Length: 346
Ligand code: ATP
Ligand code: MG
Ligand code: MG
Image (tube, rainbow, N blue to C red; front, side, top):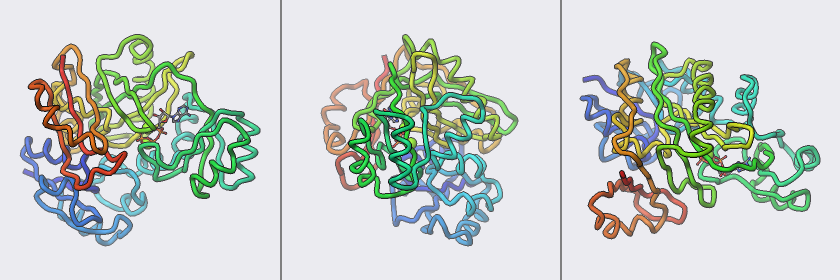
């Protein structure tokens, strides 16, 4: 079989490599670390800087197709690679909250109201404009709620500005929502589309805690509209592979929050809970194979992240024979670190 190159060696790379192996592909990982969750399951691991265009090109020359499991990559270095899927445009849009919101608004789609913030004076002006409550977010490199500061109003401006550390940022008006959900789709090179069920997500402290399907209530009601939005984004980017879009269920319909140009934590339930997982369909799409069916394998599926010490509860988790446990092989269980997840069907 062919060799798939994956830029990034975290748990998403690990789960992609497992899915690839089932289809007879081997994976070659490119990552700056010495090792990582994908290390044990990859055929080959090359250490290199993400910004090192020459090393990336040498890596790409050893594989048949290149994908990535992490979006904070220099888009120009990746754009130079042959066979990059999804394309570097998707990276460029998704890695910068300002580019992302501008792109989505230009498609006529609803986001939180937002303003660019490059200085303390910008922040004061943005708060005066949008009012409170609001969230100040760094434009780049944020995940799991990192690089964000919530503010009730102008009185919190100094603390919020100090908290994010003067990085280029945006201020977002706080969206009042009844629920949060994600739409995960996979698009093949011929434009064929597969959608999984809309996923209802619960976050704690800005970190995904649980994901549940099928949708109910307002999420089920908004899912067709949100799917159309995700589809419009994918088609505009001529996207190949799995794309995840996060939404707030607002009173007037879906409010786009952010996208991930890759497989997504809120799709981990698809390993056992869908006929074809997000990981397998991503591999299929980037390799030009037909996409697999995305229907549920059980009436109800819930995924719970194991964060920090929670991974140490695995003996208790496995006491339930229906629980499907995934541990990512990360060393140290630091607070807030995603160490694994557990999926329950039924
Ligand atoms: P991820 O790990 O999903 O990439 P992230 O660090 O990029 O997370 P966001 O998705 O922007 O962060 O925000 C994390 C969570 O904070 C959201 O899922 C939501 O619960 C809350 N949140 C973010 N922005 C807003 C907003 N404008 N209004 C209300 N809540 C928000
Ligand atoms: Mg994010
Ligand atoms: Mg998010």
